Image 1 (cartoon, rainbow, N blue to C red):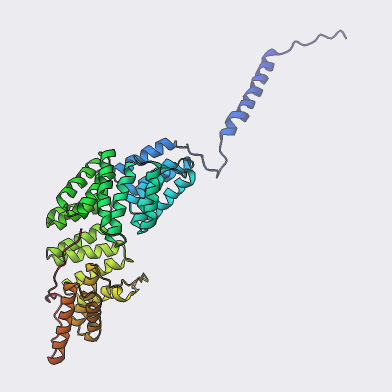
Image 2 (image 1 turned 135 degrees about the horizontal axis):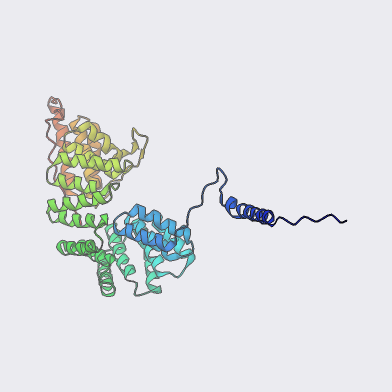
Amino acid sequence: MNRRRKRPNWFLIILLCLLILAGSYVNRYIIADIQPIGVPTPTATVAPESLIAQADIEFKDGKLIPAIETYKKAIAARPDDPTVYIVLARTQVFAGKYKDAQISAEDALLLNPTNSMAFAVRAWALGFQGDYIQAEDDIQRALELDPNNAMAHAYYVEILVDSFYDGVNSFDVIEKAISESQVAQALAPDILETHRARGYILEATGNYEEAIREYDAAIAINPNIADLYLSKGRNYRTLGIYDDAIDAFTRANALNPEDPTPDLFMSRTYATRGEYGKAMQYAESAVADNPADTNLRGNLGVMYYRNSYWPEAVKELEYVVKGGTTEEGIQMESINLVPDSPRIAEYYFTYALTLSRLERCGEALQIAQLVISRIPADELAVENANEVTNRCQQNLVTTPEAPLSTATAEPAATIESTPTP
């Protein structure tokens, strides 16, 4: 009991306490931040506003497909905002994705059933798909909700003009379209859609030079929309200013190389100038862009005929007249011969002319008679159908000559129909 007590070693005690505290810190803060092997590192979330701003820049730069994808990312970050669905739908229309645009506008309407712009953009998309009745219902609903919606008035112009072109409405709607374009101008004279719509109605009424000025005004607002150059080029082509037309189509092709329309327009323009070799090259490019389009196949067949590639011409034009399956396994739908469609008539009578060149007169005469009986008012088509009959009659009374080689043969003379705006 008299043994002396040892004094505590305070240095050792403090050291142990520090070690305990250090271990606790490592366990709580450092080890917790170390990710297990195989678990992906989370990425920072981008604000919807930043994504929308990025998509707006991509749209202005003409990068429509990237803009569409960025708008979709913004929607994923903010799925309850109808305005993002609307700008997505508008971009999809400019990119030619009309069904997708319709769906995006409908998604906006699910979020806000009284949104004027959602109805307007859906109407615009439906018009491009040929559903003019529903398109007019939607555009009128948009204007009921907001009579000062300038874009709705501009979209209405295009719907009315297209419905007239497709024979759904009479010429009376053109006056309505003129009025709607003027309202759009009064409400918003400086937006792209106003100038585009005004140019479209001027083109429809034959005021091609004024239409070009309106399309130029729209291009000044956004110089990277391919469709504006297509419209401008159409008007130059109608005026016979082919170099400027080709320049416009080339610009459209550069902005949207996946679209076959610029190649088709360049093919027709070069053919009008008699440059059939170039016309054939662009016709082939158009088919490569969309091999399932029967109309593009028909145009390629015409260009093969003009270059005296008759077996190739028959192969392509047969898809128009009879349909069939391509070597790649694509199912082609035939196109019916109807009045007031000079281009389809051209496919049919060129098919008959090509068959007669190959001395397949039994088939050629059947097509020629079909043309004469079905579209007797089409003077160009009837004239070429009669040429088929005359050629086949000559084959019956004379010894047929061997077909000319594709390198030297001259195509039969056909008359170019006047292009419609």
